[in-house]
Amino acid sequence: MVQRGTLRLETGKKLIGRHESVIDTKRLTAGVIRSFQKIIYQHYQKHGRTLPWRKTGDPYHILVSEIMLQQTQVDRVFKKYEQFINEFPDFSALAKAPLRRILKTWQGLGYNRRALSLKRIAQTIVTKYNGALPSSLDGLVKLPGIGNTTASEILTFAFNQPTVFIETNIRSVFIHFFFHTMNDVRDAEILDLVEKTLDGSNPRKWYYALMDYGATLKKAYQNPARRSYHYRPQSPFNGSNRQIRGMILKTLALKRSLTEKELVQKLLMSPERIKSNLITLEQEGFILKKGRKLTIA
Image (cartoon, rainbow, N blue to C red; front, side, top):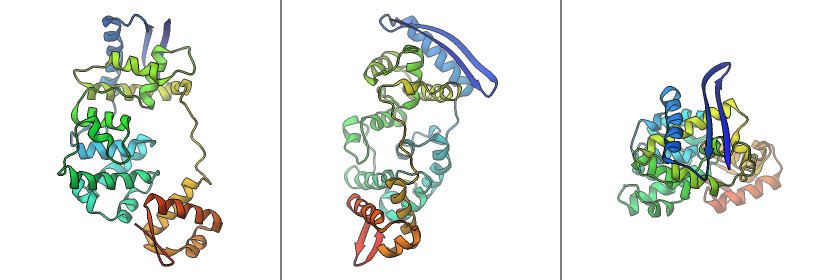
């Protein structure tokens, strides 16, 4: 099937690029691939984002940025990344740091489980890998909080290895160009195209370019990734258990230790919801209970 994608990239009222693309997914010739790559790279050359984690090849720095970027907008990570690196400059420093201090620095990024995973990763790297991050997919996926996608991103951005993965901006690009009139597009269809169009000579630069193109698409269009079969609107944060757990950890990070009753008084929430979320936090390894006192683990 031939899909037609018309790309208009706009920032406010300023037109920054326009391309007409006819892409036959069954006849993806070398010439078509080169044309597609040219469009992506031309945009990157003119409008690529300058981000601090792109200025380094340090595997630790790349790991921190990739964990931070999970389910979090670039703007929020931009504000925290350098602060975190300055506070915990390497695996050894992070492994030794108290979780309370890590969570205090992490505040504002949300999804605190990622901060706990980072500490556990650092401890594993120091004790089992002599302080060096594994440079293989098998080695990375064994680390806490790292799945196939994050492992592939780390391999590409830290070691410039050609891997095949999808994240939200990449998904937007391929749906826009290859599935322009279709809904319920599955990732399996996209992954095949990601592999076929990959610039294996410089995968790091290629994926940066794809991500930046996708980020611009989202501003210029109604997010193309909404037409993915896997798209799920994010559930409301306000009033959620995730918000309550975040508030509990933030309070304990500041106060060192509190009783359950004191937490209820400070957060002005029902004792039942506080109690159920405390149980979850204890099971996940965030907090410890010593007598009646609760502390960060």
